Length: 191
Image 1: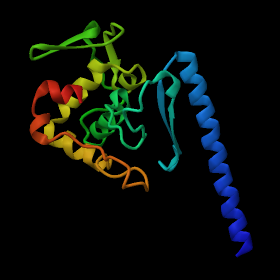
Image 2: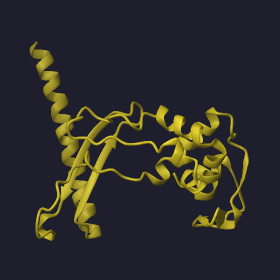
Image 3: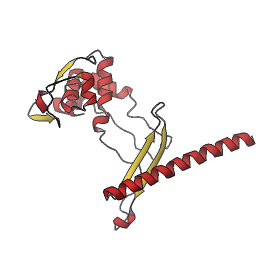
Image 4: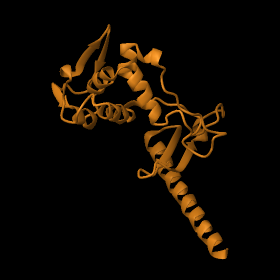
């Protein structure tokens, strides 16, 4: 029992030290960027376990505490973070292969009356390079090829609507767009 307590205490101390180090790095980054707040999460890439979360607020730059900062209470648009999920769904559905050539339209792709753009003007990229170079146009085309039901069901399989931590009372859960929303081409392409 004493050994177990000692091991638990050591593990707790490691986590506290990790949080302290993350806080210092976040605070220094905030100071360097002249930012007023930072939300930092560290995830073990092998297990998906949330290892640490830190909220940093520079109150000297804020006149009033108008909001409760918590990394668990902010929803966010994941941007390029979701591209690998869409790519994985397409691979699983046999919609694409890593070597498939995707036309990137020299950086400007029209869907209905809207344009999707890339920072760089790629001609063609392999489906794998769409991820490597973070091509909005390439991943949009892959998402369009999936269809609304396949994309919706595929995203749900990644548990995006589940709690990510054990702090369920504090955490907001994510959401997956409905099939109806994903039927709109521009919405599906920009998901």
